[in-house]
Length: 173
Image (cartoon, rainbow, N blue to C red; front, top):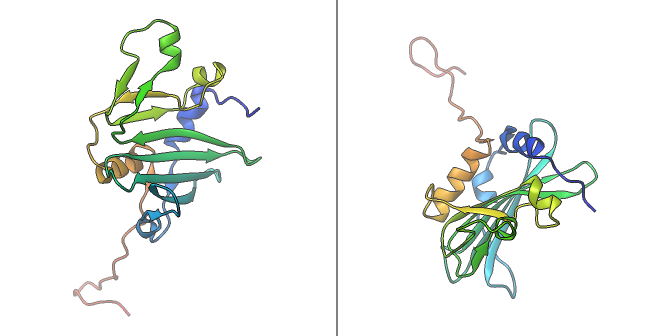
């Protein structure tokens, strides 16, 4: 059984700086997989602590609004934990199971953009680490979701490189 991540550890993983490699944009262009109805791509990104994170992107071929952008982290022993998913609009219902068991209102939604978050309580209940989700209005397309995801989870883009200029405005050799 994988170890249970505490909420504090999850929070630290989410805010850890994760420098994207040069050419990262091209490495996240999805590709169709044989005999499946979605396109997918993955990109490993080492965090500044040395821990490996992965961005996993899936998008339905026949519905551009049905997508997932997933943040996974890997323990030293190779165990992987899904920390978050930015999901698009898909036709199936989502129910927050712990909240439903507790008799809370508004535990289900359908066909809405939504964000899944890893929680300690879902792990302790024997459920998927990222089983809790909330509808969101911070994005309304795949492209905006990807930009927002990268910003939320501290993925830093490579610095632009500019030629050095001499004081007279000419390029330095």
